[in-house]
Image 1 (spheres, rainbow, N blue to C red):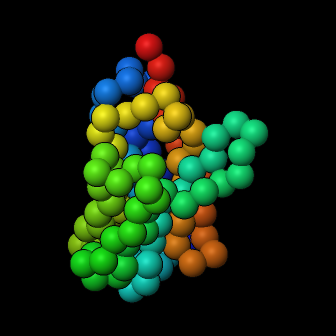
Image 2 (cartoon, rainbow, N blue to C red):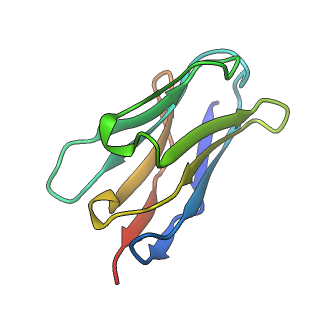
Length: 112
């Protein structure tokens, strides 16, 4: 059974940073694309960043380019999202995804 477990969310001031982690189990972690998505209140879930199995190819939504960095450690079965220069509009529940599997989400709140 595939399980994805996010952590690292919290409350941060505008301009601050957070690092999200997603620990995976029950899957061959190194194979396949993984991604981070987010869902703000009253909005649909949207993709934030994706990374190929080897880690060499990354894709970002325009609103986070230059501020967020997705990475993966295949030896630790963990996906990361480094978020810098956070803005209030980044406030959302952030989800980890692989294939049809989703984590439970971690709340990120950017507010002064």
